[in-house]
Length: 177
Ligand code: NI
Image (cartoon, rainbow, N blue to C red; front, side, top):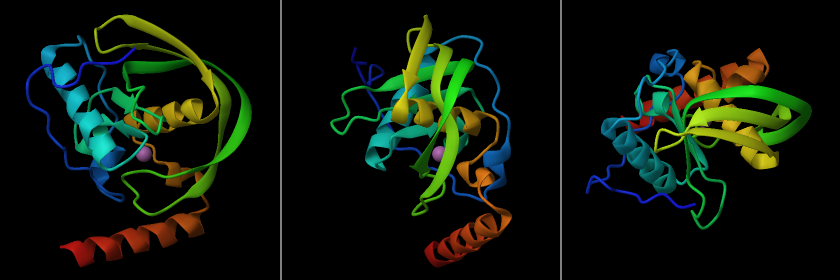
C-alpha cells in the first residue's frame, strides 16, 4: 500500500524540536477524527521524516500535541505508515537495539523493548488498522508511541549518560543559535 502524498497540493518540512525542549514532554491528545488537517499533518510529517532522513517521527516532535506517528523503515521510502491514536494491545519478548531520534541528533544508544507487538490505530483514511509486527518496525513503533506520552529513548539510559547527552545537546543548540 502506498499513500498518495500531498493530496492537498502542498507539503512542508516542519521544524523538529530537540531534546531537552520541554514541549517534548507534553502528553499528546487523542485525535477525534482523521480530518483533512490531520492528513495534511501526516503528509508534512512524512516529508519531514524523509528529508531528515529518519525512520520515524511523532507529532509532538514537530510541536503538535496530537497522537499521530509516521514510520518507514525501508531504504527506498516505499512503506510509509501513518498511525493515528496508536495503542499497543499486546507485547511479547524483549529485544535490544541501537536507537536514535531526530530530536536527539547524533546520539545512538541501545534500548530494550518488546520484540513483538500488536498495535491498533486509525490509518490515514480513518479506518481501524491492526498491525502485528516484530524486529525493527516493532521497535520503531514503540519508540514513536513513547513520544506521544512525553517519553524519549534517552529516558531508558542511565542518569549519567542522559546528563552527558543533555550537555551535548545544549552545547549544540548554543552553537547553532
Ligand atoms: Ni524519536
